[in-house]
Amino acid sequence: MQVIASFLVALLAGLGVGGGGLLVIYLTLVQGLPQIEAQGINLLFFLSAAGTAFLVNRKRRTFRWKTVLLLAVSGVICSVPGALLASAVEHGVLRKCFGGLLILSGIVSLFHRLGKTPS
Figure 1: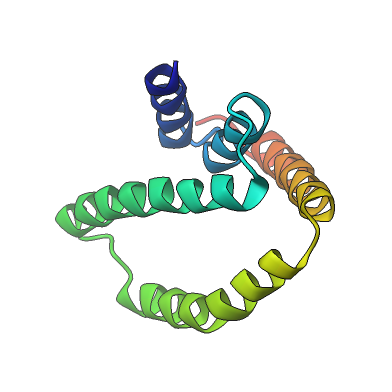
Figure 2 (figure 1 turned 120 degrees about the horizontal axis):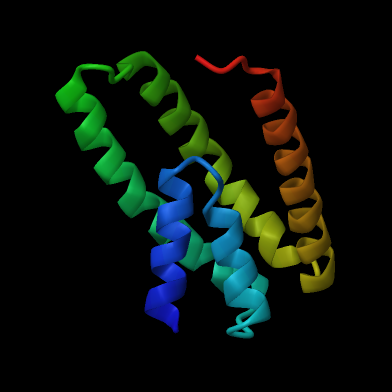
């Protein structure tokens, strides 16, 4: 079951439909993992996907080094305070914040897709 769920999440992420949020939902609701552990597993999933994306974009010569450097530096700076905050917040509050973020992300994605004209 876990292999099938992982494959489906990877497939949806590759299609641009979503992915990481779905993995966290699966791990918390179906597998019963605490939110913080599910997010850690999701981070490992994301890092492996990012490595593959890096190789593809480097091969296509579409890699933007300045953007990556900016995101990497800000990610490193914000990761420690973010982890401390996540571990200090109650799991119920963390779940609600994450759910709200998923809903907001879905709405933005939906309206972004609706605004595009077919080519």
